Length: 325
Ligand SMILES: NC(=O)c1ccc[n+]([C@@H]2O[C@H](COP(=O)([O-])OP(=O)(O)OC[C@H]3O[C@@H](n4cnc5c(N)ncnc54)[C@H](O)[C@@H]3O)[C@@H](O)[C@H]2O)c1
Image 1 (cartoon, protein in one colour):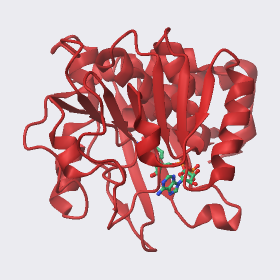
Image 2: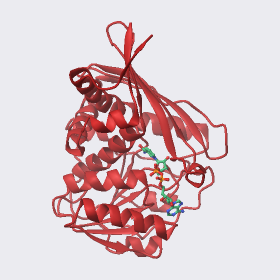
Image 3: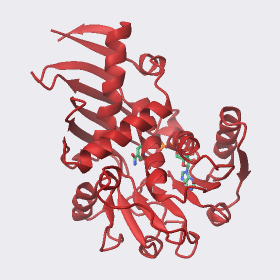
Image 4: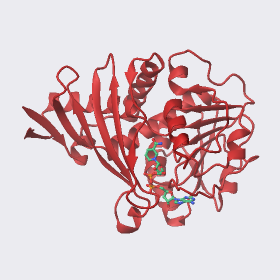
């Protein structure tokens, strides 16, 4: 028996675009909404303060993708010259269970996380939104912006704030080159970043005891907030003032809340799972006034549908390294 190993470079060279990942992730959410996926809440271990290593198993019917992502997030890594997020993804043959691929998961994670922001925007943003706000100008912020560009055709202005000005500068330099039609604004505080922002993405380190900088009253009427960083960025009052609160996986949200570290401050009533919106089981945004919050924790279904396409491409092109089991 043989499996394919795909390094980070192998994965990137397969050339999957954000548009393709958005389609795959939207379809994954649709199948989740239709209960055609299996995805238990992710367990994890926490060897250092504020760090996690999570196991994320998933199976998606119809596209026939099954496997596990083993992903870590270490907030102190950037100071060591290492990425915050690293990990591996294993794919299995759904018929036999035999492992068929092992691949680096950092690129997949970034792309499908960005795509989840795009899907939140597709169903929950005002379609004519022209101004985005970014809190935390790192890896996930880059792919989130790429997905917003695909989803929001009126997007023109991106307001950026990072604790480290040089990180914001690197982000703006890179993103300007990728999206020359956009105007970037460097902001000196989270509050300044929020001025006029209609779709706000937060992607700062997840902390066990956060001091969220985004408060009630900051998200404008008709705005959409997408959190990729659990409850690191938004106060409980800010989440609760939103007319709708959605998540990429309500089951996982409540499971994590029960562990007692995160999500103590989320609203009692959760409107919808993104899967329900994608499957057309519930409406997304219903008027131009409502403030909407999307808590996107990251789900294995998104990983599996993305990895499945990469695997098919690798088989077709002969990419990667074959390893004996
Ligand atoms: N929801 C998901 O699907 C998903 C997936 C991957 C990562 N994440 C989370 O997204 C977050 C960002 O991950 P990343 O890979 O982009 O990390 P990163 O290190 O590349 O980026 C984080 C950025 O936040 C900045 N920052 C740190 N503290 C800040 C603060 N208080 N205010 C403003 N900026 C601050 C850093 O300077 C850095 O530029 C992490 O919390 C990670 O766990 C979520």
